[in-house]
Image (tube, rainbow over all chains, first blue to last red; front, side):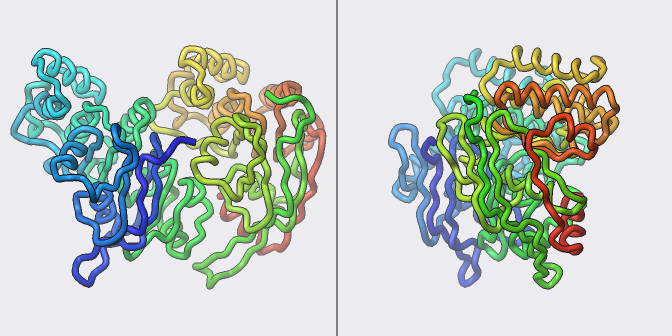
Length: 257
Length: 247
């Protein structure tokens, strides 16, 4: 078995006396899609942002398998090294595309910016790669020079995917990526994501309150409540044979997931 | 693939009890100290009335339900190691599902936008086969199960129950894994397609796969069983719970 890409031990994040998340242990392996589920206020977004080191943890350790150094405590990295990680080997897809895209510059520039961060300099190559990625996320190539503010919500979300994946990251964080989408365009987004994750052997940590999304995309599921992990396992096992009272309540409260 | 008559699966003292926390912690036993062994080439048929825990047992063997106690020892296809399904990491279980144990559920779980043929090809591709080879093999299986060719390119969401089930069966048989679990695969099929499934099961066993299955009709059971495991309902409440959980 390969070694973990991300290893987390005893992680906690507090807001004053209030608990964001606490006692978090988890291992994520290359190519795994892990879903974090729970109701609003359960700490799932706090956990996601802390795992991505965008919030400073108060306790515990996050180790990541850096390309040139192996498992490394992220707390020992400089701000510049963290920024490098965020721009290249990691991606972050936000719930609101406004937080993940630059709305005033063209779609092509949104994608090209990430490529330039990994050292691409040739204008024609960057434009070519951007056009290629637009096609992969099913956006017509003639929209390359349009700003994302003119795109539909579904297209904006797919553009976020292209912007994040163009640098070939190994780990992508996603915060409720389908929450703002109409049901009619969710399936297209989810299927695209599912295909790309498998094709690129991408590890994904995905926050959602939608258990059907978890079932479709994730091999593993974590259920959170009051900032703690109450149950974890293979997604179908947790959903079909939930053990914890809270998971049983959660599963029985949704229409056939 | 394995040599004939090598043990593929050994179950020791398997018990399963559901605890329904929303019903005040009500405990519903569905399996109690079940033990059996399955060897390469065997077809073990689970016998018993509705609610006897047959589907629950199959789900435990796939790691879809957690056993409450006991051991489920499986020989891993890649390493020949004996692994206890109840005590392995989720990553290892995912790998076992990819290369060692297949499962045909009662109902197909449809994935939006994925064609029937691609859905069938997927488990073979997961084993490392090229897309073209896997799609070709998927076409052969769908043709054999008499699914009209005009449907192959469509997602099965709009198919009839019998058509969906044939896609499900093809998906289960395409990758030759050492252990195949079948939950009522023939329930919604006509006689001609039932006969195809019987032939597929026999061929799988002849090739050294082991099968554990639940079959609604006596004709299929007679045709495929090399062994039988009788199961009894532990309580009427438990059988109701099992039917409710399986729904």
